[in-house]
Length: 371
View (spheres, rainbow, N blue to C red):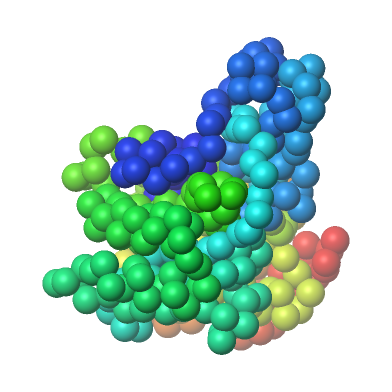
């Protein structure tokens, strides 16, 4: 679960990490009042769980309360990379002398936390040359000892009060990481303003499986309405930005299906892994879910193992007989009870594919290619 920036900063403040003065608003009037209270100039940041806000026009500056109100009105209700802006964070504008980067994350390969630091913050960390990154794998049984923080600041070229502040922030971030069951705690940028050091941004991602013991954290619903419905049905579903709806069984099969659609010039509308052992009822519900999203075409790609092809065929015929299906549907069935499934579909006037590539190409053709 990702926390909004303002939530992450509230968490930082509790652990003694300094953040800019700010307020969260949900209207233009509140924005103007907040700007007047903070004292312009201010910065306005749309609160959405996506990166690249600056390039998307979701970070703006205002030199007066009226200007802040106008900017907030233009932000609120907008969609940034598919996420609707419902809140805006208004903060004092900082005088930035230097930008740093700090994070604590899970390193799956090393099976331990990794502390990552750079003297070049404010940019995508992937763009920073390897020789300008400081990496330190943390032994969970020991944690971040003072000498580690001192070594990090030395390698970043920091000194004086700035070095001492960063040495204080690093173990605080690690405490958040451990105590809040986080997968990522990131500050980018960590800004130096004279002798002060503040977290100008906050990214905190909490392990979903640990939310039951993080009762003091606000719950953030990241799923769309369709994704929530799919979750209720026990389906693995993620919305994408294409127009060909996909249903397959198994994550690997589903990913291969998405790749094939793209290889033939199409755009998948979703990832839907119906899973192994999905029966007739669950398959019918999955089809209804896809139809509700308004695709140009649907591609059903089943390699029957535990999932029986005849169950899928019966589910499709059942849905087809109960309602109008306004878009073309391409079906590929191979595996358990394949012949019975093909017979069921033929009896209903439906021809299915055995070859996955032929089926994918047909789905893209029926959807209108790249349109």
